[in-house]
Amino acid sequence: MRNKKLRIYLEGTLFATIAMVLSLIPTGIGSSFSVSLGMIPLTFYAIRRGLAPGLYAGFLWGLLHFVTGSVYMLNIYQVIIEYTLAYAFVGVAGFYSKEILRNISLNNHKTVQFYILVAVIAGAVGRYFWHFIAGWIFWGDYALWGLSAFLFSLVMNGISMMVTALVTMVVMLILYRNSRFIFHPKNK
Image (tube, rainbow, N blue to C red; front, side, top):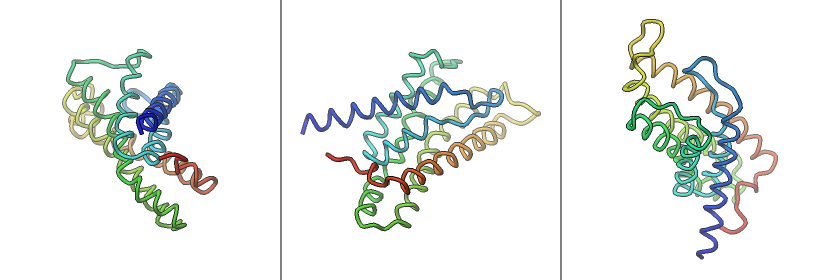
């Protein structure tokens, strides 16, 4: 049992590392918009292993930003929100793990695809909600086009969230269609 849990969390560490490597690929336009490719492996892992391991791997992904020097710091509160809470909340996608895995076993393809989309949206909204809060509270002085801090953060984080979620959905559905059993761990 202990060895099994260790394997799950080591797998999460690996997926967090893959997410960090993908995060280093430049996909941003300006300082406020980017497509987060790291969401792909983290969402996959959360679906594969569940909520708690997904939250753990997301939290690690956030911490890896410190190791790589990818942290933009205004103050400690902003850092906590954006690099611990926001990244951890990608793991919310794991809330739908049992439903997805059960329906894969039952060959309910349309139901699986539906829940994969819901899981991706849950993880993206979970993460970008915190980025929105930080943008509104801490980054408001940098709002462009005369927009209020609230509206600028809502628009920029909302667009980033939607594009990131769309890219993640496409990849998750391709993975499911081509090899659905990779979502099922051999030893739960």
